[in-house]
Image (tube, rainbow, N blue to C red; front, side, top):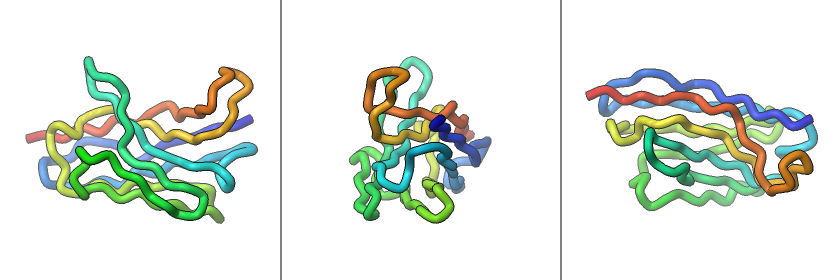
Length: 120
């Protein structure tokens, strides 16, 4: 059974930093592209960043170079370092794994989400 468990969210002031972690269990991770998405209230879920098995990264333009995604395959963990946080970064952040999910018949696995709140 595949499971993605996020941690590291919380309340931070403008300009601060947070590091999110996502640990994967089950038959996924080392051969899969992993990513982080976020969803703010009243908005659609959007891609923040992704990283391939080999470490090739992709970032949404709107992140402005403030976020860094990385992975540790030995620990089955993907990270999102978030710096210079802004109030508009407030959202629930979700870990994502790209792979066939027979339960949903999609190529998506999702974590439960972790709340990030940036106060001004």
